Length: 201
Image 1 (cartoon, rainbow, N blue to C red):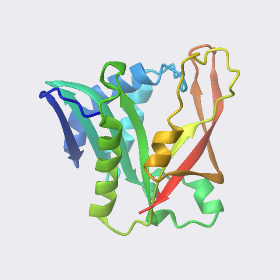
Image 2 (image 1 turned 90 degrees about the vertical axis):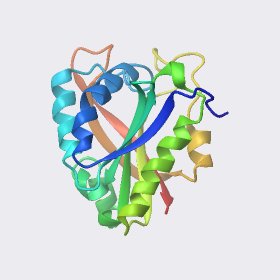
Image 3 (image 1 turned 45 degrees about the vertical axis):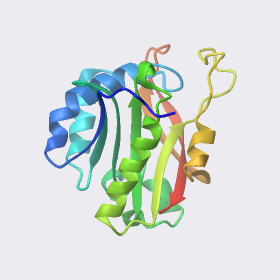
């Protein structure tokens, strides 16, 4: 279903222009990631640090969706080599050349604007950036692993696995990263497993 709102605009933002949209991106991350399945209890201090590191990455891109002047959704991407550490290590251990992998970071979209095709626009934009940069053989992203019986899982939750599969992505067995953050129902940070999905470009 295509979004028929004429005010909706999707932009690909790169280079120094990324810094201009970081406050809006931080706001969206704190709203959207607070919900299932991330349950992220974030802080502006952490968001500022994390996003400034992302913005400095060579080849980074933000695909931003605007309804009028308001950013209602965004997704990020950058070469995996710029995300060494927690995200790059599982690929290195599995024998992948991370210089040839493009990492699709978070996608955040307000509930009011879901179901209008923006998920496809976010992947289209990030994969287009990978092709424009050149030299990438894979595109990847990761999702948090949560138990089905988690007490905060909504009864009507519909996982995005079918959508990702339609885009050509599949989970890669054994490629799992760990990342720490504070859940909304926890008093301190805990470690979360992140399953990677990947497709050939």
